[in-house]
Length: 115
Image (cartoon, rainbow, N blue to C red; front, side):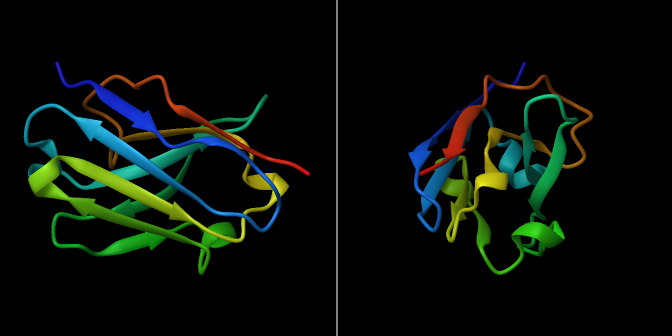
């Protein structure tokens, strides 16, 4: 069973930046499209960004131009570079395949944007 381990979250002021990292066992990053998802309190978990094995990326409208998803298949990691963070970006961030239909969710990493 694949396990995802997300890291890099924290408390940041509005306008700040964070870089999230997702590690997983096996070679799934070379096989599947990957996504970063987030879940704010009392809201459903939504896709934030995705990247195919060929490197094609998509973003939800609210993060376009601010977030960048990338992958390093050799290191089995997927990254999410977040800039110009806003309070509404506050959420628990997860990675998984895209679509997230194959593996269980990890623990996520908390991102809090607050002054």
